[in-house]
Length: 183
Image (tube, rainbow, N blue to C red; front, side, top):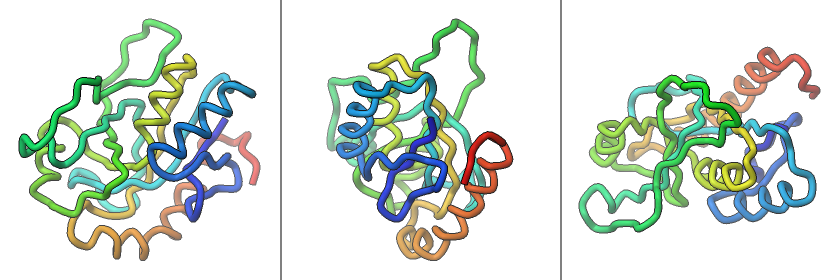
């Protein structure tokens, strides 16, 4: 099953689950309880901390939930803040870039450098909660992201101007990679 956030980030081949950490967790939990999929693919946009440029497509199954204040020592968490998708086998996996999730968008380039030092390269609002729900229900998951912007002072402006093209490019990618998807 292919899922996406929703609102203005929808795809004809994907089921919307909600924007942000809370809506996506609630709606994906509901879906898993009543019609549990065998495998999930989450598609969406992402901001780059610098490694990737706009319109790059990146796949990952590792996510984090780290707030910007963590890097300055202004916060801590007692929970596991980096998780990997559930896998139903013991096959070793290559190292993937980590996708960070927060309900806030990073606009400070120097904070982005702290993420990069820890192999966290992208930012997507929903991915951590999607990972956590999939993990709880033992559903294998892959995230496929298209970069819309850098995480800098122009993040929102660039996101808005690149979003439609990014959605189109991600749709072409998905339809080419997964021929069975129907629009």
